[in-house]
Length: 400
Ligand SMILES: Cc1cc2nc3c(=O)[nH]c(=O)nc-3n(C[C@H](O)[C@H](O)[C@H](O)COP(=O)(O)OP(=O)(O)OC[C@H]3O[C@@H](n4cnc5c(N)ncnc54)[C@H](O)[C@@H]3O)c2cc1C
Image 1: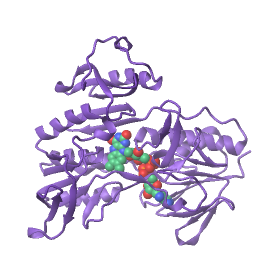
Image 2 (image 1 turned 90 degrees about the horizontal axis):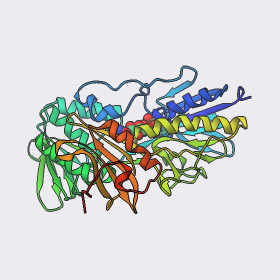
Image 3 (image 1 turned 135 degrees about the horizontal axis):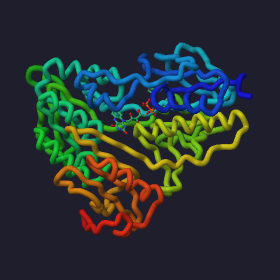
Image 4 (image 1 turned 30 degrees about the vertical axis):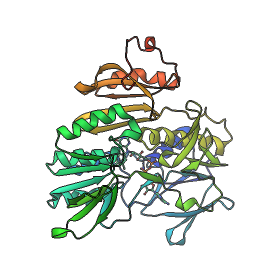
């Protein structure tokens, strides 16, 4: 039934690759064309701030042979009425179904010669700078990419300072307990943290060609390399004027449908969540895999006239690796959550904790306790009310 149809996937990375798997697994028999702006064979992004900064290239993703890969090509716009994606160079790709999987782009500050880390090319540039004998690196932003870059610098013996206007690393994504444990870990490994202070500007041409990083309190840090870890924005520029609803991502329904025959998946997708009673856009690896595969199946249902799958409502999941420790997080922590340590001891860098908001478990965080963290996940998925009997452990609140 779908043999004569064509699907265009824009974005040849994790969500796009998994959308192709989802389409084929659901039985889509037509033509699939994947457009990717990066010239590289699709690769895994998480190693870019970890092993790849130490010299190991990221692994290639497992791509479907039964698709046409247009790499090094950028989609410039889409016309939903005539169902054509316009590529750079002027060519147009007609489609019956469209997958939007353009991910996110690093926020790049206006300061010259500051490296951001999103792509393999960014990673190679940063690695070359580190290999070139950088004595001191300043990382602006202590989110998960910034903190991982700092840990990778320390693993190579490079002096590093991390500056952030927030008081703790990873405070937004994982909350204050993980933040405190990681701050102590960074300091123990010799990273300098300048927290609670904004970077006002980065100036070029200090002594011996070094950068001068000016903090809002007037202090100046000399740096050979400055890395921006300022987060990412959804890559939706090419969709402006398309008629799709855009608001910090492509707005989709609960089944990731953005318009008839158009789905979005991965970092670019914003969808309603029943479990959290709000809309979510998630910038994590597992989400891109799960949404990509789901979006492929959803699109096949739309194109073949089959029933839509159950709404997508997976609990967001993130992991990060720093100094040989793995932090995991399920759910959506927020400032002000009550945090209860239900297993282990944060001081020993081995624990699992629940984050409670309005009496309900909204997130689970942990370090080096994967089985415990996984076991607590259903409390978040089921939006369970918090009682100490929920985990069978007596706990006291860590932050009240
Ligand atoms: C350095 C780094 C480390 C990370 N580490 C972790 C981790 O430890 N744990 C974790 O859970 N997550 C991690 N992540 C997040 C995870 O990698 C992302 O959530 C995931 O890559 C998202 O996949 P995606 O396919 O949605 O988007 P992306 O991977 O961003 O891919 C989107 C692709 O679309 C292309 N594109 C954009 N616009 C166009 C266009 N107009 N035309 C054609 N192509 C276009 C882009 O070039 C890109 O290749 C990390 C991310 C980074 C950057």
